[in-house]
Image (tube, rainbow, N blue to C red):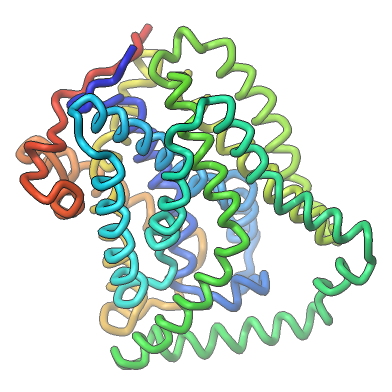
Length: 406
């Protein structure tokens, strides 16, 4: 069944909101912990409850929900192209404007609000995504799998060919690493938690540049998930879940089983070689992300589950606005121009803060969407995209689910 440009798949909106919650559960740590401290893998908090929260987050959440969001980005590109073609509009021109606007907003977000911005990377990878817009589903799948596997294959090959390739990544000593992590945490707490606005901006720009270089390793994975989302959309896998139910169940079992096993190895097994960590991270996370997508889609077919999961659709329809709002609110909570809680909130309470904020966002998004057709930043984004009235060009009608609930 073809999707009209004025329709939305309720499942996709809800899945986007679900991904937004998972991303927030991870991002909040970067608002209260030094980027370098996190990069070195230094744990700052004691207590079994904090250790358990971080362990479960590492296995279930870290690195998976941003991949779901990446999947939906590619999925949305295909929907947008189909809509433009149906209206006889120039898709390339529209999408390039959309990406340029996303890039500009991402730069502003990264420099003035939070250095961990993902919009910049999505915009840059989006230009590469456009090169695949005319590809057939099979071609998209081959490219997607190749990009998702390229990093672990290269790392594994290099490690097997040369022992020094893996030894180069071995830490000098755990004690030295911990001291380095503590140093950076204290330095950043003095800046973000108690510094002036000028000091915060300078440090944020430095961290933004550093985070960009850190993300380069993940670019193949991001583009790979873009293409996987495009493949799913062209194959109409989520357009009619009941028809594709058997394949989705297989994806859930195989992807979930292997992905979870690899994540357990990554989180619980100490002393893994670097190639082992790369394989567990770059193979396990995408498999588990796809399993989550399949599980969410299957549960959405049942009335009771759909009623609960549908609440994710409200923040999902305003994901752009809510994502940036989360950064603003965390800045007010953890930085010196707000409450200055940087480095003082334990992980277990960080998770609680996320749940409370996201619940409020879900309620406020529902109230907003009862009065307005789109979110405020979504309006600005569409204004750049269509160079005219975004409501006329991109109006969404009432959500029309392409699946039947039992």
